[in-house]
Each structure stands twice: as structure tokens, then as C-alpha cells.
Amino acid sequence: MEFSNELFEICTCRRFAVKIDLSLEADNNVRVQVANSAGTTRGGRRAMQRRPAQTAAGVSGNRRRIERCMIEIRPVQSDDLDALYRIALATGDGGADAAALYRDPKLVGHIYAGPYAKLCPETVFVAQDTDGVGGYIVGAANTLAFETRLEAEWWPDLRAEYADYADTPHAERTPDQRRVHAIRQPRRTPSEIANAYPSHLHINLLPRLRGHGVGRALMDRWLAAVSESGSTGAHLATGAANTRAIRFYTAYGFRALALVPHSVSGAVWLGIALRRDGPG
Image 1 (cartoon, rainbow, N blue to C red):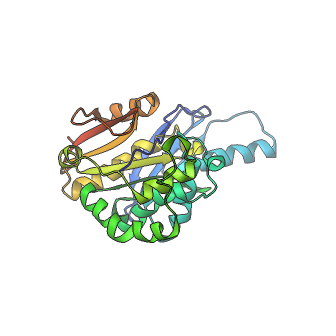
Image 2: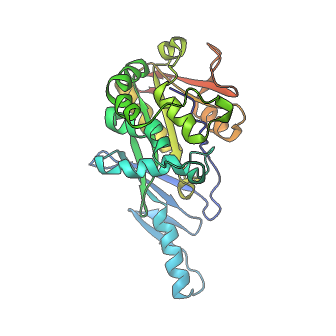
Image 3: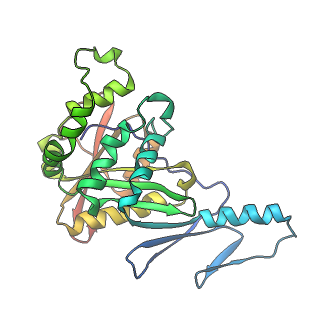
């Protein structure tokens, strides 16, 4: 798959001393509960230390901040598609909002969100808080098979919708034109990468969910799913200058892959070996 230039930001939570409580519910969804420094969580409810009296507005604001930190990791559903497209665009400029860059707001999602939800929903998970879906991890357990399905089942309709810009020099193409070119002439993952690390992923979070351990929870869930399918490894591409994302991935266990250079200047391959029960 083509390098997405996405930035996955892991940052410290400014309002909360973060405590993550992951629990697997009966519906096989993961609840990510974040307790702030003002209290602990007992029996699924928050016990807050006494504080000086607050105004009604202050109490309401605190409640909203606490509720926002109650995050659910769950499989994608058919009605999540619009949210996936919105997040893809809202993080499509190196992790920042790309809405101002594109005339067609669906182009980023057509490449990095929609095909996964449609063709392999079993390896797509979303993070949802009280404001709705605010993050996702998408990917395919078998990259080469997925790229074959894209050619047969996803790209043809989009190619009929979007005219090619092959005659426009690359340096003169607009962001829309570059995405359309990627739809009409997508890069294939090198076999050296796909054979050794057959699965691949993209992960994006809106700013409100960053810094709460949601990225790690999504990664845990996704790697478990592809491991159970028999995958022996997973890869991704990111910018070499994207040091924050690289720190997150390497801390998780991904390592730089020197099997073959990335075809996009400034991009690097990262991979992680997998066992049946998770990362190796």
C-alpha cells in the first residue's frame, strides 16, 4: 500500500494523570477507562476526592471531561463508515486536519479507510467515546491478497468516477490530483516486505483521544486479530521525520526494515514479528 504520510500522535494528557483500565466485556468489546489524579475507579464507578465547592458550570465541565475519557474499543460497524472518512480527512495532513487541502473531502478516505471497512471489516476497530467514534485502526491480514481484491472490487468504481491526471507533472499536481493518481495507479507493496510481514495497518486518532493510551489499546486489539488469523508479521510505513510516531511504534516493538527502500522519498518501513498469541 502507498505511504499515507499519516502522523499518529502519542502525547501526555494535560488534564489527567492517566490510569488505564482495560476490560473485556461480554460483547467482546474493550472498555478503556481513564482515571484522573483526583480519584480512583472502584467497581466501575469513579470515587472522587473531596474538593472545594465548584460552580454548576465547573461541575458540568469536569463531568464532560471524565466522560470523554471513557473509551470503548470495538469492531467496526457498517454505520461507522462516515466517521472513518471524517477521521481520515481530519488527520490527513501529517496528523493535522487536511480539510483545507482537498476540494473532494472523500479522497483520503477512499484510499486509507473505506476499502478496509468494506473488504476486511474483521481487521478494523474503532475507538468511541461519548462524542462518538474518534479513532480507528484499519489494515489487512494478508496485504498481497488485499491488494488483489482492491483491483477487482474497489478501484474500478472509483476509477470510473475520477479522471486521471497522468499528463500533469507530479510537481504540479494538487493534493486531489495526487490522491486520484494513487487510486488509478496505486503502488504495490514490495514482495520482500509483504512476504516477511504479511499484514499492514493504518492508525489515526482525533486530538481528543490522544494521550489516553487509546493507540496502544487499538494496536493490541488489531495485532491479536491478525495473529489469530495466522499472520506471522505486520508492517507499516511512516515518514522518517515523524519521530513521535516512530517512538510510539518502536516502543511497541516495531523495528525499521532494511529489506527494501521505500519508493516514497523520506518514508521508512517498520515491521513487527507475530506469534499466534500476539507480538513475537
